[in-house]
Image (cartoon, rainbow, N blue to C red; front, side):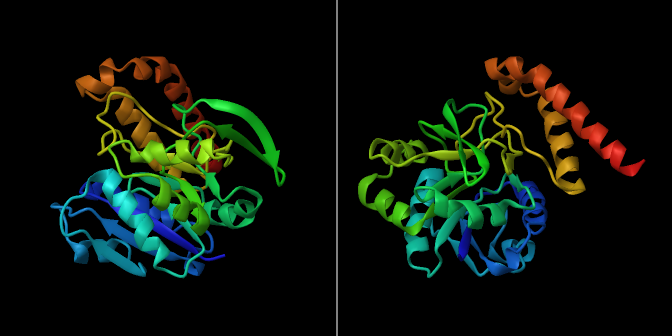
Length: 266
């Protein structure tokens, strides 16, 4: 199975380096192809991106800004022009379990051609199942970030789902309505480290449940992210309802990660 690791980028250079370092720690990454789809960023150019993702097989820069949803749709179209089997959507504000790519290779054939490695706290679980010995959830919908899709699934999306400001959700809903199981790992192998982006204004904190970092770099980034989320002076984050609900959970998670780091070095 050959995977296109599709990375949509737009500004925020500080995230690119963290994401790239985490991605390059994934096992067997050299067996797959990194493809960058930049949405006409103004904070860096193609040469900068090439320096961060030094082994990228393809870097496409849009002539004009398409927005997150438009760029995603065009990424789907571009993917079908490749010879790869699977598209793994890897937004620039994610980090990855070292096993993420191996998990896709192992589990995607047992699904309906779509598998999310990101068990978002904001997406309700319909039920829990076990497939190929792995705990999973079915959901009514989920976003694109951290999701692996087969060529057949992407072809369906392009032919049946028009581009809109809610494209990121529309295509998963359309797949669910036509009987495709929307399967998600119970234990996330992708984690979100961005508070504000094209599809998020900072009013809530989204993160993947049951994510185990797998290496010291990911542990460090997680501690920094959750600490910043807790102490941020941004009025949107501090006044968000979900922020207040998750505050205790985030503090607990920071303590767990710190304890794991400390135990490893004793």
